[in-house]
Figure (cartoon, helix red, strand yellow):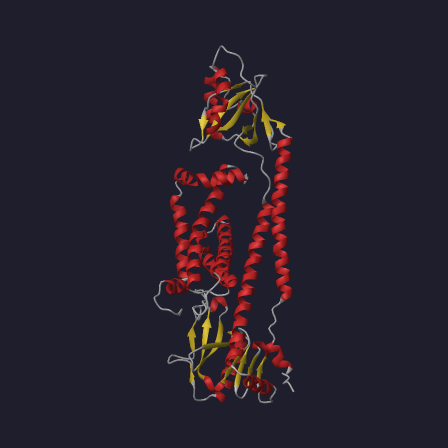
Amino acid sequence: MEYQYSESMNKLLERRPNRRVHIILIALMVITIIGSVLGYVFVKIEISKSKENVQTFNPKSAESSYSKLTPEYLSDEFAAEYDDSINYLFAIDKDNNPYIVAVKAEDMNQYKDIIDYTYSNTGSAPAEVTLKGTPRKIDDEITGLAVDSFNTFYNSNVVNTSNFNTVFGDYYLDTTQQPSGNYAFMSLCILIFLVLAFIYIYLMDKERKSFKLRKTTLDRLDNTAIKDADREINEITTKYFESQSLYLTSSYIISTVHGFEIIKLSEIKQVYGCVYGNNKKKPKSSITVVTNDDRQHEIAIIKLDNRGNELLNDIVNNIRTCLPDIVYGFEGGFYTRGMGNNSIDIDTDAQLVKSNVVLGTIGAFIGAMLGGVIWIIIGELGFIAGIAGFAMMYFAIKGYSGLSGRLDKKGQIISLIIALIMIFVADYSSYALNFCKYYFDGNYSMNNLVTSFKNLPEYLTYADVWGSFIKDLAIGYALSIWSGFGIFRSVFSKNKKVK
């Protein structure tokens, strides 16, 4: 007759991935992908409608997001942006109403005929030209330059600072700006997708490690040992610590803190505690047993408060009762200080199985992107964005190990490279977004974003903010190196096994 395990052992042996959580997360990720695509499509439709319903430019109002102006005359440029990429011109319509328009320097040639006609006393009128763009507020700098230039253009004192708004209105027509839509919904969907993807990667990583530990346990022990452990679970002398799902029988320790694991008491040679965190971070302690093969088995993780201390002492004292002659702690005491508060965990046997490089790289990229979003958000809140360097490294590592199934040395190197590259990308993106915010009045159109990313180096030079950019970058790299010191050490170490 086939042996029937007890209900307690069946629960321990059963591999129970939370399919409901997986299905929900995958469904939510699909929804966010669909949402981002639909958001992009709706913005494009909105932009298309704006182009179809272009309104006549009104320099007194910015109600129309996309406007047109058909000038009779067009002047040479009277001002230009710092990088000479955009020129400012005067436009005169058939009713002799003056306007200010902004034109890309590269587009000036297509207006050469009408400009030449403006300054010529002879010749026939050129073909009609229609300027299209978006209204933008006339700032003080443009006002100051326009007053003198327009008086020179008319060879008369036509305008001054007092009547400027009466003559030109409050807005100029910026032909460099196409209709833009609100990409906030699309961006929100992408951000939510990244968060969900990281949560999914984290759960996959956790389940992978749990399944691996369970498989290792079943491969190491024969059916007789598992049956013995099952019988002892139900003995009256067995100690069960419910909060830790930890069994201490007369011959075995059965732990589920990281997955199903059975440890023979006869194979244990040392027990010690490890403290993680500090007083500000509500420290935790783990209990670890070391077996004769020098493998370390973490069997409990406990909060260090009054109840936690009682539980920890209870577990250790019960083990001491069964194994009075083994080593407890170290020469300096029972506890050692863990590095979990400032380092990134690495599989201790990561060299045994190769990782899936393609999936791991995708996971590292997703994780690093999420860290990049955090970097940008911190920067927008006015803090030093470089403090997100740790998140960049951590998420890249977790992303790789979650999708690849293993964090080996190759995975460490790939994650490290992606994280270091993404730190620069995040810092550059943060400054480019700020450039777009101030230079284009917060109009985050695709064209403006491309321009901002393309022209950022010139802007950093013009605004003399290279120092701030490099400072954030240096802090990001420094914190990444500090937080991922174990990774850097293992990557550049000649040892074959990760310590």
